[in-house]
Each structure stands twice: as C-alpha cells, then as structure tokens.
Length: 507
Image 1 (tube, one colour):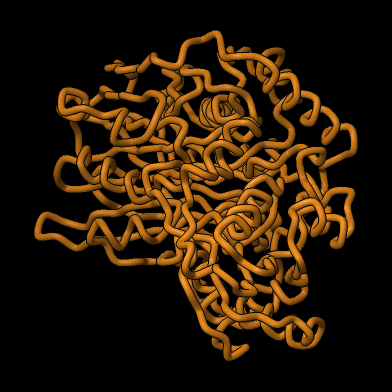
Image 2 (cartoon, rainbow, N blue to C red):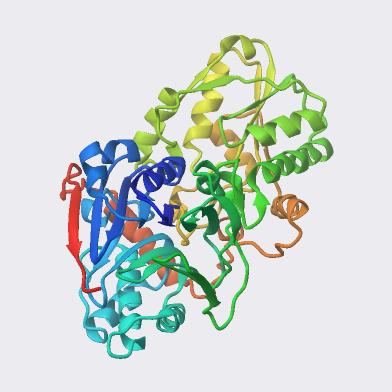
C-alpha cells in the first residue's frame, strides 16, 4: 500500500510531484522520495518520514526537469525502516532507470537467485522493488538492439517482466533520454490511473495510484491502466500503450475500497465514497434481519474511513447519527504503525470521546474493519469510560482471517484477531455487548452495485483465496517467520539518513 506518481509536463515537475505525494500520504508514512530528469541526468532526493518532513526548499531546487516520479512508502514486511529501501530506486544500465513500485512480489526469493546467477546483477537491499527494477533492466537490455531504445523494445521488456514476476505491482519508471513508463500486474490488484492536461505548450500526463492526485493537480481523468497494460509517455508528450501480458484478469484489491483509498478517489472507475455508502446499506440490512433485538440509541463512526458507512447505516435503520469521537489529525494511521505497543498507545492519542454523546446510551460503533483488534478493544473501553450503557460494534468488512501478500501490512495470521476465533469470541475479546460483521457476499454486492463492470475482486484476507495462484503454505510460513524476526529488534541502519543524489546516466 504505497503511493506512486509519475508526471511528464511542459514545465518543472518538482512541485507537482510534491503536491501529488501530499495527497497520497495516506498510502504510506514511512518514507518518501522524488526523482526528476533533466537532459541525461537524474536528480533524486528521498528519506524517512512524511512528505512534508523529507523535502526542504534546497532539496526541491535540486529536483530540476520537466518529468519525474515520486513515491511514499510503508513497509509490507513488518520490519523496522531501512533508509536504503526508500524509493525510487536507480540503476545505471541499460540507459539509466529509476523505478517506484506499489505492491508486493510473491516470488522475490526466486527472482533474487535468478538475478544473481543468470542476469549477473546485484541487489543491495531487501526490497522487492529493487528486484523488480533489476528484472526490468535485464529485460530491457535483452530486448534492445545495439542498446537502442524505442517503444517496441520497452513493451517487449514489460512483457518479459510479466512472464517472470508474480504478485501485485503497479509501477512508474523513468528511462533516461526516452520517457515515463507505467505498468500494472496482469490481475490489476493495485490501482493505477492516468490523467491528462491540455496546455498551450502541449499535453501533460500524470499517472498515480489514486484519482485524487489527478483532481487536486488540475488534470482530467483519462482512464485507468488496464491489468497487464504498459503506458509509455516520451519526453515530447507522445502517449502510446499496449497490452503486454499473455493472460489477464481484472481483480482489484477489495480492501482498497474498505480502508486504503481516500473516499474522494475513483478506483477502476468506481467511487470509493459510494461503495462505502453501499457497505453501510448492506450492513444495515444484516442488522435488521439478524439482530432486531438490539436497542440502539445512536450510531457513531470510528473516524475516518467508516463515516460514509455509518451515516448510511443510521439512515437505513432510522436511527440518530452522532459523532462520538474527535480525531487528532497529527497522529499517523494506526493500521500502518509497526509494533502492537506503538499501535495501542497511539489509539488514545489519536481519538478522544465526546462524553455527552455516550452517557447513558446504547451506542452502535461502526468501523471499516477489524484487523488486529487492538484499536477496537481500546475504543470500546473508551466508550464505556465515557458513560455508554451498552456498546455494540459493527464492521463494514468481513472478518480478516488470512494473510495478505499483495502489499497490505497484515501478513501474519497470528496477529489477526479473527484468524482462529469465532465472532462471539472476538466480541468478548474486544469487550463489546454485540458484534456484527459484514458478509463477504454483501461486501462484493456493495461494490458491484456501484460498478457492475467489475465481476471479480482480490479478497484473500477474507477468504484465503490468492488470486495469482502461486501462494503456498510454505511461502506464508516464510513471511510469517520473517515478520517475527524483523520485528524483534531495532533497525541498525539508522533512521535519520536521507539520500540526495544527482545521477549521471548513459541516456
């Protein structure tokens, strides 16, 4: 769940990339980076922290050029931050490449071995994004004739990437002296959308994880990148695209709509806000039919992702809707924070109850999902401390029971409260008087009601079905072990390092 952006413009792009990363900040708070191109030279700055903290005026002044890419990162392996893994990544051969990636590769171990033994390339970090960059670089070199690059060569290289790489990946990359490349995995698991801006000096193009970056930067939505498709925009602003995968299936990650994406975004032509309203509608119908005995005085959201669902649920059940919690917007998203102790502490700093809204009432709290249960348990306790007589808890998503291996930070089943508990056991664990989960069929129906054109979703965290077909029990065990090992000790690489590079390329 990282945020990526790429721009080819008619004027300097440093501010566009910075502003775009600001509105994609919800997709990753761990690190941020920007790379731009000017002539045959890449300019890059990246480091740990929020976008606003990574970049200063001196850094922005060094990011010259009319095209570039940006990235905001959060780690998917659960390990402490390593400054070397901030993106974009760079290799100088062939041509000079920089790359930023959102997603997670499921065959990284095999690819690393192949890169070292067959491609004769070197990997310097544990990041699968660096692996992906080196696979792309090797395929470009293999596809090129006399080290000449053109659209045909690039599309052939992306086809080679699709043949070798497994998992979820949305990518923006720069090829020195040529232009911006963007592509998406054959299942379209992670989102990628294209925007266009007509100027007197020519057309400008923007590619980003979510449409909110397109809107706020004054571009117009063109379309989504299709699963398996590659889009190429050269430095003159010429746009070409091609389907590069042999077989495709459109199966976007359903958790994007539940939690990850901003409500004002469109994902694959589907309004995130409207889908969350529909989730509330379907959840209200389940409560009406399965728990009509509940004496609910008021409905309250857990800010912010669940607000549309809670509003629609209250409307459908003809119940008062109230804001019971005030959110401190200077605290990061607890779901993305490493370590249970950090998450537990941050809940009380992040939310504060409005006592008069709880006192003597039976309240129904609505959240987007329940993952580890840490936040839910603390919130239920806060409601009781504020004077609630009874606390009911509803989740707009089904129980999260399985590991996610496609780029969301929930790879360990042992951390998931629903992995080995019944609904009633979960209710007792979080301390609620009643617990209501959305059904998976209901969640799918909510999304299909907004966009009937999407017939399949990636739902592995709910049902254990891994759409790419290559996830084994052994693989799940290995990432579970890696997560426990990575979380056991501090990062000894140092978290204060920032990288500010001017890279001479061969383009």
